[in-house]
Length: 120
Image 1 (cartoon, rainbow, N blue to C red):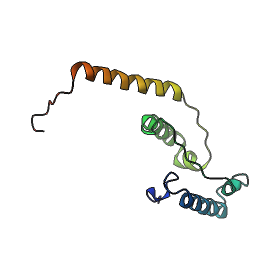
Image 2: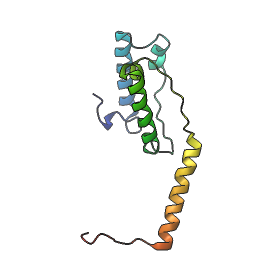
Image 3: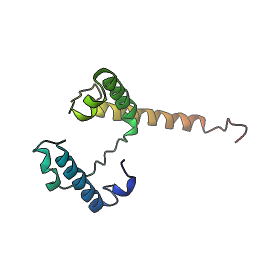
């Protein structure tokens, strides 16, 4: 089971690197990775700090994962190195998300926030 945020590369890069190397070593012993992938412990750990949050794409990815598991099986999706190409365009998704935020902000400025909950 994956442990919590104690292995965050943003808050504790040394601990993250040690854990990554341990996992790769165990994968090598189990024969789950190729010899080319065995070189990963020699590379520095890095963190993806994309400006788009994973949640903005997570519904799309989850839908794809469910379809793939139903079609090809869980093992094929998670263990056989299946490559998947989708129609998601990250730049277009960012533009759409920004457009929604801007539109909601403008709407809120025009109409203001209203408390419609009588029990709150």
